Amino acid sequence: MTETISIFIGVVVLLGSLLSLVTTIGLIRLPDVYCRSHAASKSATLGVLFILIAALLHFWFEDGYFSARLVLGIIFVFVTAPVAGHLITRAAYYTDVPLWENSVQDDLKTKEKPETVREMKNS
Amino acid sequence: MLEFESAFDALLAISLFIISVSTLGLVYRVIKGPSVPDRVMALDSIGINLIAITAITSIILRTDAFLEVILLIGVIAFVGTVAFSKFLQKGEIIEYDRDN
Image 1 (tube, each protein chain N blue to C red):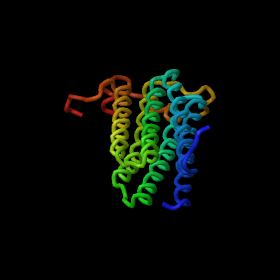
Image 2 (cartoon, helix red, strand yellow):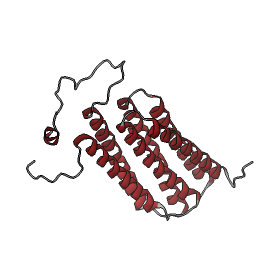
Image 3 (cartoon, rainbow over the protein chains, first blue to last red):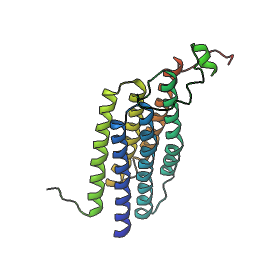
């Protein structure tokens, strides 16, 4: 493996870990759960995608084999991380987690929430 | 002072340290988090960080033995998050009645 490619892969891994650090700063500093879901689902996904792509390139250029398991992992993370973020934010809204007090708009306020467990099942 | 064989290994070690610090910050949110969805979200991010840690470790050790672990951690973290959010919203995870 040439020196240039290895430095390139190291820099991509470093970029991914810095994005992961951005996730942590967002989760600690942002005011409520709906703001935090942005940090948790966007930058965490992009960071782990950078690191997995760097691992794929490393095994491709050093050992000369294209790892199908890493491709499967990349596709799986790319598909499921936004779905998990959406589901947990939806559960937070339905269980009445309060918005930040400086929030100016709540588009779902006019839509009535399901009250009983049975209505929740049908929604 | 730490010694590395090349700049590549130094970059990988620095990245591993940054991700470890980031995971510790997420543990703070899991412990403190004012609501349950905060905690679940931070646990999901910890799972994603574990995937990254496994990938960097397999690059450092120059082995491809850990690549199944990446898939397994991804699947388990996703299923855990979905089960938690469904339990929070509906109060049960597996529904037995068949009329809806």
